[in-house]
Image (cartoon, rainbow, N blue to C red; front, side, top):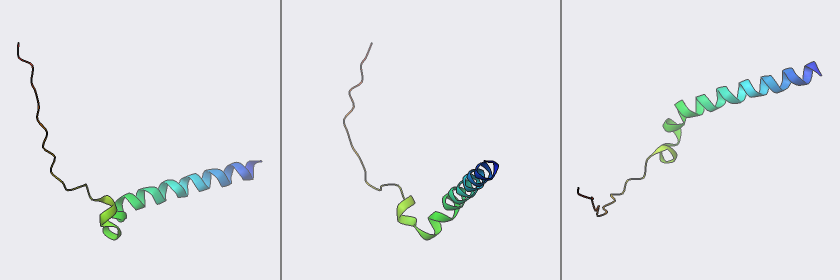
Length: 50
């Protein structure tokens, strides 16, 4: 049972490291996935006055 817990903990640690690495290195290899949508949005706003 202890080996199973250690294996799950090891996989969680490796997964966390991979997620952090993807967050830092991902924009270098996949810039389109991390880019914000570049379109201008214009909407009228009605403000209530007192």
